[in-house]
Amino acid sequence: MTTRSLTTMRRAFAHGSVVSIASIAVLLLAWEAASAFGFLSPFYLPAFSTVLRRIWSDLLQDALHVDLISTLYRTIAGFSIACILGLMVGIAMVTMRPVRWFLDPLVSIAFPMPKIVFLPIFILWLGVYDTTKIFMIVFDSILPVVTATIVGINSVDKFLTWSARSIGTSRTRLLTDVYLPAATPSIVTGIQVALPIALIVNVVCEMLMGGTGIGARMMNASRFADITGVCAGLIEIGLIGFVLIRGMAMLRQRLLRWHAESHAPSSF
Image (cartoon, rainbow, N blue to C red; front, top):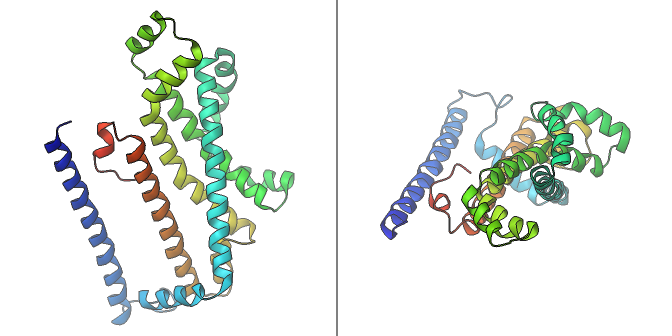
């Protein structure tokens, strides 16, 4: 790509970021104005400024810090395990035919299923602990990484494979020097898809199982009709998701600096 085209893409990305921030600001201002002029009942939806004060008040307490750390820990732990296992399973399914024959039907069946329905079984097997929540995150997040790895490796230019084999490249070197570098954009996309899934599943598990975490905190607030606490939890989860997704997008740009796609505006 030329320097001019890269500059154009970066300007487009910056413009898109400004528009995105502006849209969020307009929504929050409309929320605050609707509350100030009495269009919204505080019982159903408090003013945005009230929610911000609640978040600040909660930040001064240790309980919120524990919940934030718990949510981040389980999300990142489950996501990391899902990425490692998903990459390994995807490579095995491409390179080893018996593994592909055995796992392909299972992946095809599991992918469209709402995997949260397995939570009661995992609770019976593993108990109401962090292990169950992390296991559920891995179970739900692994498939996008598996399928992205398979698609990425299968999409590698056959001429690259033939050229490498013609000079006597071993299967291991073929995987590490040809397949994985060429499949990296697809794999990273699968990882980006898995990250919000990990956060969503974790919050749902916290809501259903209780314990620590922002999801459990929201459910406790809901039981006492504390709508301000519920809205505070929503904003906190949104901020966590935004930070994780933007961090992943920045990591993608670093990993794929050589790839044209990394310079284009991204919804992630």
